[in-house]
Length: 249
Ligand code: 5RP
Image (tube, rainbow, N blue to C red; front, side, top):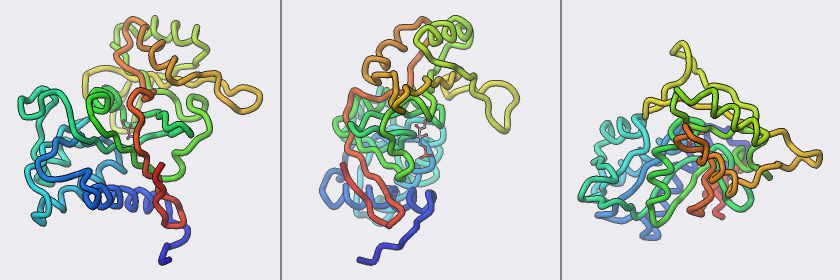
């Protein structure tokens, strides 16, 4: 075994971003002519670049991609991957396979996503794909969702106050997301704002939240566009470890 020890988080992202595309191509899960969804974030972009290298080398052709954010759309343009939307007649509303990153992954492969504020378009794409593949470094594995990495909730700006009140009734604390490089709130690719919501852990360290139920419950609040729990299309997950291995589960 030639595994390098103690890979950093960044090195793990590079390892899993490349390995996932190599393995999916090798197994025929990615092949010429397929309709592929492409996720957002530092790990997903490595997979986008790896896919592009297969296209450039002529090993795969005729890929039609759907991007989940401006970030990914630009990466596709820069790397020569043709981009469509789910509404294009070439895509006809569904995809063969989608590859994306995640912020937290529980033992049942439920996810929290939206650290890059892209979870609305990610969920639209990932709930309309036959096969969902999630890639991550090992820091993303958790026992329970909802108590450490906050649940991103995209909201219509005019509904901020009422949504915060409703989330508080569900036991959550909410923070309006801001970022470096802009004063005031983050504005998403869809022109909305993000509330980052956390629940206090129970005494045994577990979460008071059932992700599948809470995914539906939060979306019932008027003014919520979509939340970052992903529980309805169970993914195949590739995890890079610091010992240089890439686990699949
Ligand atoms: C963006 C996402 C990303 O996939 C998630 O934040 C992981 O990002 P990274 O690969 O940079 O750690 O959900 O909305």
